[in-house]
Amino acid sequence: MFGKIKNLYALSCLIFVIIANALAILASCQSQPAPRAPLSQMPHWGDSLVWIFDAISNPPPPVQPSDWLFYNKEEGQNFEQYIAINPVSRSALRKQIYIQTFGAFDSLREVILHKTAQYLQIFYDLPIRHSAPQILDTNAIPTHAYRTKNEMLQIKTGYLLNRLSKALPDSAIMLVGFTDVDLYPSEQWNYVFGQASLYRRVGVWSLARFGNPYEDSATFRLCLKRTIQTAVHEVGHAFSLKHCIAYDCTMAGSNNLREIDSRPLHFCPICEAKISYNLKFNLHRRYLALAKFWKDEGFHEEAQYFTEAAKLSQQYGLTTTALEE
Image 1 (cartoon, rainbow, N blue to C red):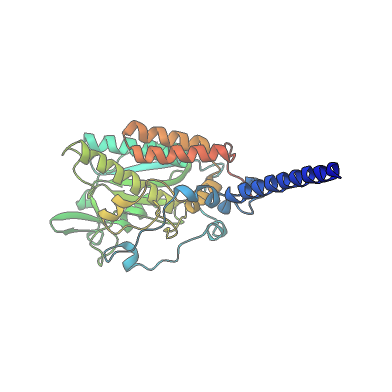
Image 2: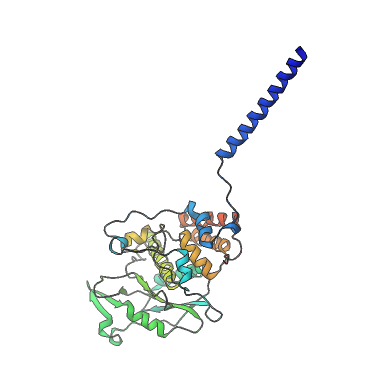
């Protein structure tokens, strides 16, 4: 009798231990985040990159009265819309980005131009070539294509874009212009930092409002940052990317220097999906190179971002070229 009771007691204890362990395992599973699905199971390349890089991206900041979106209501452009428009891309013939300078650049601005070209080459994973510099002589420019505003010479962007279109080399994906002269798109505008065509494979931007790089090292760095940010933005337009409204992103519109200075120096996951799908570059290798560039230049925040992006790209197998759908 007592043996049976003892056996029943031992059996009940064993059952209790099994149930307790099972509940503990279940609670542990529920407290841990669900494992991420393999990248190959994602339905779209755009969804894949949003899913991977959203954690290190920021939402768009609130719109202030002087901001671009305060005056320009935009719908944005998702990944599917971008692919559907047959964006500008490289081909068997067109494999290089050409840079054309307009005007005379002093030594420090030449350094900024050189570093910006270096960054564009890494960012878009494409060779950069330089066309012969051109002088901007108002005696040779139509009177409707320039003006003086607040004692500053300004050139109309449409005039320069037309010049660039006529000078496109056969091997150029696009021809983009740098100038030290201030720009304006139309009589209704006070100025513009830059402008590019979504389909004509040309763009132009100015260093005129980015500060005096001779003032001190901090101003030089700020001028460099603004120039790179604007160059990446306008080349993005030339690859048919529209303004971004989904995240805080280099491709977001900027109406003033405060907005430019607040923008990150990288694409958001959606814009990154567009350009990486288009150009089929190796994301992991690119992130490592971009992190090194910013580390060498002393921009620790951007270096850290691309270091984190490199880790994520390696973790989720983005060590070859972009997936094709």
